[in-house]
Image (cartoon, rainbow, N blue to C red; front, side, top):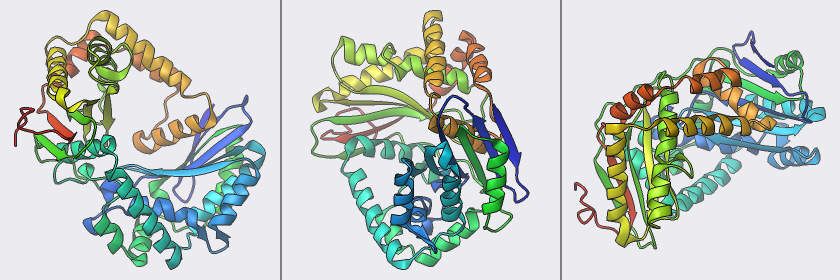
Length: 414
């Protein structure tokens, strides 16, 4: 059972009771991510993700970890381009401890200067680790080329200059501006009582009132056709894609079906053609990303440098084929079955359900029951997929490559 309440202080609360489990997962979702940062504060959201776990005036980072470990729980956080989440998973009998810690770190972060410096070094190492991994870097280059001169094209972690230049006061100011009730959703799922969760949050609230969602501007610049980063690697890492639908589009379910047929599963066209039939890649897949006002559909493949041109040709040919002819009835049937099954399997624990209801309320303003989502998937027709394929796959494409490859040899525009 899913219930929602808006507290007097402005926080939206959503819970889903799961009577057959022993756990509860609870978390705060802040409607601010890396796209909402100024150039001087590039990486501030991710920096805060680290710092809130470093403690409060009455709790150290070690004591927080020990308290959660002592009841068999776990605690984590993540940052995206449009929101940041902090959550804890523990046995239902320890839910009060979870509310204590989550509320304390969100309303009373210490921002001790020595701990800020420690986490600054950790994040700088994280940036270096990302840059050392070509299969991650190629996706960042793709986003930068797809959304040039826009925050959606920038990496969530920030860069070396911005992280080094960010002061404690800068971080504290960003926190004060964005971590306000009007920009926050609290979600929980598991063996819980909604009213008790609401009362617990109200009793522990110690933050400022007010707050609004960030004002955002959609990308406007045309994509850069190609970007190549020459590296001495064993494989060439390739991403090919284009802009796609935003997360509010009614055609997003048709796009999900199209993505599955393209490269979303073992039976997908690209997996069968590039890996199974020709053996040109071990890893090949497609994915979609949806933001408030933009989106992307992309294909990734890692292959031997000598075969990069052949793989690019095969991917381009498949994208052209889908744009012109779309998919057939059997492919749509398989895609629908996969999407519904994947959704059901992903909701077997409290963490997954907490994430679903929290994210849904934050980014869509509503939480649909699983049966309603399944009905929307079932309602997708071949005509819907064909219309979306012609629209999205007919848009200008971007190619990103990392490895010992030459853009001219691959036929890429300089």
